[in-house]
Image 1: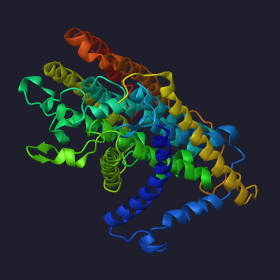
Image 2 (image 1 turned 90 degrees about the vertical axis):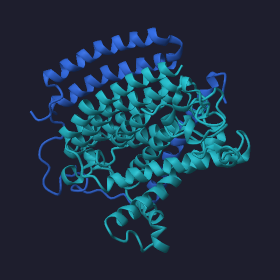
Image 3 (image 1 turned 45 degrees about the vertical axis):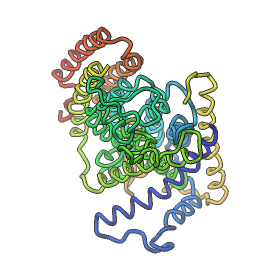
Image 4 (image 1 turned 60 degrees about the vertical axis):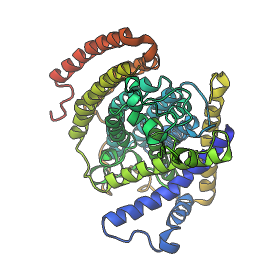
Length: 361
Length: 124
């Protein structure tokens, strides 16, 4: 149980190192540049150098700032993002907390992040920081509603809030029989076939649309482009972290990348079959059995973690691709998308999922 | 898989908070040890692109942000209420679904009112 926590403790900073490097290389590729090339081979050590530099920098607190709010904000933001990893499963039998309210807890923790951002913005006593924090707060809370609605569709299907239980239901180790498209009347039992056929997005095809809503909302929750207007440098310098310097700034960046990985993992767990293999068993071709180990064995841990992390990293790559492709939205467009497009779409999906579930049983 | 849920399931969450706090404290101690500390009048001013600071940052902010926050409280509480219902969705069956649709219709009437009132119009 605690082994998972240790793994996540190492994985989150590890992901930041890989993620920032990837982001710089991908942005360079998209813009036809080289990206970091100087430090180490292909610039591989660039981020290590950056972190060492940030560690040596002075921790500046502006005189006008509200000192305790200013100093406490990175604490709150980082702790909120990091503690969210406690309920995520990594492989069958390998999850930090088995709390029954996993999904609930995650939604709560995401909201705590907003408090940290508002603390940073108000505490800085800087106009840019305040505007950035206000926009960020409005954005995150607006997109939490479509996010909550899309997750609700999954909970309706799986009948549990425990993320590990949700994971088990989406593959060959499911405790209950899984029917194709979640419809019992079709009479196709895919429990033994597993693979992508028992993923949530196939068990209820409308969940694919819900995943798109989830993905867009999660981009906004991370303050990622095209929703990065809280820190839009062309108008707000750095947004809520304008006044931060040195390691405190690094902590905020660490939280941002941690959040990216968190929502990608969550999306993979809820919609894309969690740690289950995408390959189904077809007759004598036991692809699902070959690519996933029994729960509780070392092979099970390794294959489970491999599939989950692969799915999550693919989602992260899409997040980066979106960032370097789409231009930033305006505030009114952002609010329009959140309240008048995604929220009604989320409600319709919620209704349709309910009907689908009732047809299924 | 976990079949019984105990209060001790929440322990890892606390451990995770402690780990996060410990990580921050350690990095902060290190950075204060090896980083310089130099004070000057200009450096401690709030950043305003290098020009003289004008007034205070604690100015009134557009009321729209406040309205959005209030709307969020309404809608988020509603979404949170729906989770326990969704977990028992299968057990409640058709009747539970119809009841929830009724509840949602009432709520959406309010949503329609809000939109017609122009609360979510940002152009003005």
